Amino acid sequence: MMSEEDIIEYNKLTEQLELLKRKRVPTDDRGPLDLTKQIEVLEFRNEKLHNYNQKLIEEIRSLRSKLYVKGN
Image (cartoon, rainbow, N blue to C red):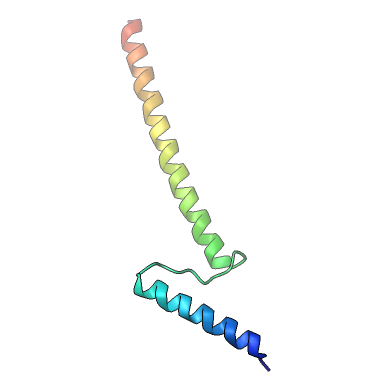
């Protein structure tokens, strides 16, 4: 059974959520140990790192080709 303090705290939290919804602020009520959230974060990081690695590879290839042209 909920105590009076619990009910007050619950009402405060619901009011805060309503205010955030009105402001159209995205809310993520999943906790830090939620596996789907962790997977999403890791997939995002993996994609960003992959793109950065591709950028570095292209830059290295470009620099090598410039050195190769100057060397001949």
